[in-house]
Amino acid sequence: MRDFVIRRFISMIITLFVIATVTFFLMHAIPGDPFSLPRETPQEIRDNLEEKYGLNKPILEQYFIYLKNILKGDFGISMKYKGTSVVDKVTSGIPKSAVIGFGGIFVGCTIGILLGIVAALNRGKGFDYLIIILAILGVSIPSFVMASLLQYAFAVKIPLFKVAGWGGLEYMILPIFSAAMMNIAFYARILRSSMLDVLNQDYIYTARSKGLYKNEVIRKHVLRNSLLPLVTSLGPMCAGAITGNFVIEKIFNVPGIGQSLIIAIQNSDYTMIMGLTIIFAFITIVMYFLVDIIYGLVDPRIRLAK
Image (cartoon, rainbow, N blue to C red; front, side, top):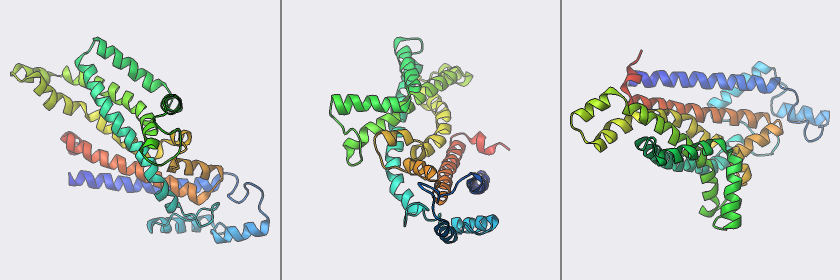
């Protein structure tokens, strides 16, 4: 297991280095600059700003300075918002995005797994068809439509929760369930298919033929092996919990990290874009790294394979 973790860690470092390098050179290759919006900046002021942020230096020198600063945890200061660093923006926005994202994963995972189990154990019956229909609807309806419907139903017609904003629990419920709807549908479909596949395996018939009770077979053999595809999906889902709910944050006016990246792109804010991109990539890579380790613990064949 140690060698397995070391290989995955080295791969993670190399991937992060490649992403940082590609992001840096792409940002300097695209047209425009941070000092041309919203109106053209006078040349004298532009020269001073370029000197302040080191943009007047050769591109390779800028690159190595940027890598050196990243290693020290310095992602730079925003070129559009005075005194605002990338780290400050991330630390203020990530907790709010994480509450929505991880809350959506928890609710989606819990409800989706239960629905998937019920559907698999009642294959071809009414419950199975009903859950399949609900899962298809959950995947088909866009998140912004679902969020708007929940706002209208539970904040306008039945004022149980707040329409938008950020504060107490009454502000969090609707964004969390908006983020959870697609997760519920995804987990229900995946677990149903995985359980049906495992139930038809020879070792399940062998366990039943030895006299094991059905509930014991399902709990000890079927569920554990059926959860492997869900473990694989947790990597991108956990990363998306922080970085992937831009639309929901916008609809419910949540001051999360997703909106910061959109605003930075609109303003051509080099340091903010590069910093947030690398931090997002780091979060994604770490999540995949942890999932690889969990996958290796759940299924020893993964870590023993050459």
